[in-house]
Length: 310
Image (tube, rainbow, N blue to C red; front, side, top):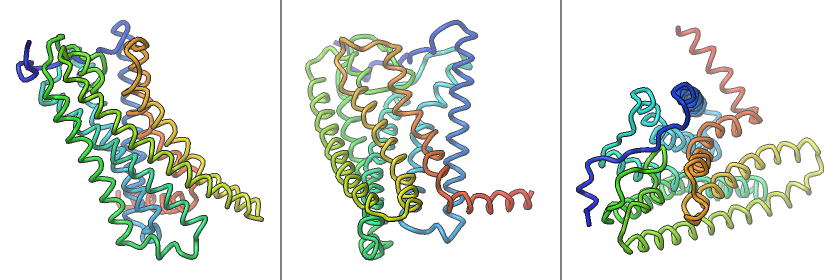
């Protein structure tokens, strides 16, 4: 039985099809990546530079943009580089780093999304207590807790996964290093320990999802009592996109990490992984800024400033 440390590198899943189709996939991934960099970068710059946006909601949105940049930058650049060089290689250390960083960003992001739902609940259901319940110190502590949850999750899963003996080759059937695909390479029953840890983590994520849903039940009850149709529309426009992002993120993540091996296939695994690791970082800037008049106004003031400096 070969130890995992004896594997010098892993082989990632190549983009399917002919060379022309692979280049088309490359261009699509590159466009999504550049859109994520631009969108999240603009959100970070706009919120950081406009003091009118230094509120709890935008503070959490800034943290979300940072996490999205980290998540998509962990997987897509390596895939793009491999496509250009027509190779599949990733070093053992690089694979471990991908697993650690992706889990760190995604776990922290879901914890932050839970916090953001609480922020919206307080803002809509208890507006008179908003500044008391979500002062600057509380917001910093909540954001730090989200980042700490991501760090703890990543440390536990990475250490557990890469301590397993791997003797089923080194081909990872995914365009990045993903724990379920690495577990397939293990021939030891020790992988059940990591599977159990995944169950515990997913249960914690499910509890967070229940808290998010409870927050939105209260939010929607409060919104329906707003006499102004314009006020109801504004509240729904703020909250519904958040709920859509959370649902997509959670359901695809659950499916990727807990699906039975019998329904696993390279094409299905690829689509699911793109939906939870690539799509949210690219669409979050649009969802959170497209209907947000304050952010759009601040961005319109920021961009002309850039052009004047040029």
